[in-house]
Image (cartoon, rainbow, N blue to C red; front, side, top):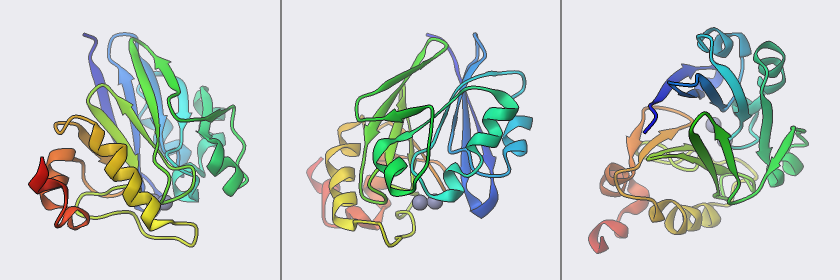
Length: 196
Ligand SMILES: [Zn+2]
Ligand SMILES: [Zn+2]
């Protein structure tokens, strides 16, 4: 099995950008291209960027995508619902179930609406990049377009279908795992943990 490299880059507004690369082929995806794009490009270490993907359309998570594309290449992608909501263009509009290749890996798109209508979680092997859908110990800040009920439904029906050992990489704050959040995150209080 090919080896995966994951580099976290801290951006403006405390957004976590992730560079995920196939250690053998040096092909990479960039998840949440906020600003400044130069800071992301500096961390690429010679990798070939295949995809620049936003977990959702909030500016902190997508604002640097065109600058990064100009600096490093790759195709930009965002879920079609957030392209509409935030009037963002991209090379590719994602839908649930899409798979994007890089090196020997596949990144699967799981549509998890709620925080925004087009929020997605991006799953690569046993790693899930979850944007603001779930953070360590909480969820992303609610915005006018957030539909909290829908978000909880997405977490319950889509995220909890992943293996418990899945590592979670949120758009803000530290990494965690599905198992740890199920035990500690207040959103699961009185649910989940007892029945699994
Ligand atoms: Zn957000
Ligand atoms: Zn955010």
